[in-house]
Image (tube, rainbow, N blue to C red; front, side):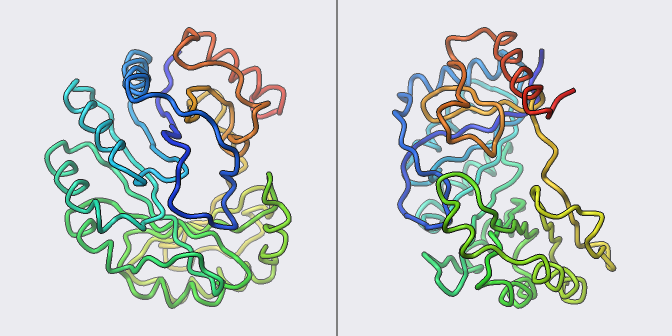
Length: 287
């Protein structure tokens, strides 16, 4: 069985403590040597793309050491990563130099918190060097009650290649917080209608995970607004790996111990796929 895509949480450390973050649990991280073994095995399993995330990928330079290892071993992966953006200026040259030399970075995403109760703020200007270098750059915005009205002006700045908007929904250990800031269906409906009129240079994707059927929402009138529904499970197609080297079956439940069902390094590839498919059938994600 070939997995084409892997999502890998490479660390359990962050330089922030955002109230909306679902990465609450703490796990022992793999050593750098074991992380290199993960890369070796991903190559052996036929994975073509690795999406790096963590509590924060750019909390230190380990991500770059892994990137260097991939290049040194001549593994033909394409790569992407998501960051909170706080250290983008600090690591700007590390990213740009490798992206240009190695040629395997397909996308960089910035999880952007710009509600009125923001934990941090990353200027869109920070991303200009990456966009100018040809790196596809995406803003990932958790849509909250206090930032709905700010999004159209933000998008009109036109600095980002793409904007991905995800409504906050109650889940996991942060459900009480999520309920307190969750946007209403009417607010989301009004935002999408507004976006149809203000999108200029950006492509905007509004993701509706499990809360509103996409067929009931307004459609794009200019071809640049995409409305998707994230209720399609990736079980069986995507390999999810935790910071402690375990495999889990679904991105939305990545942080519960009960969903971590085998060690990636110690379990044969066919057995891993069997575990994931079994979990998917249990949830009726896979028929």
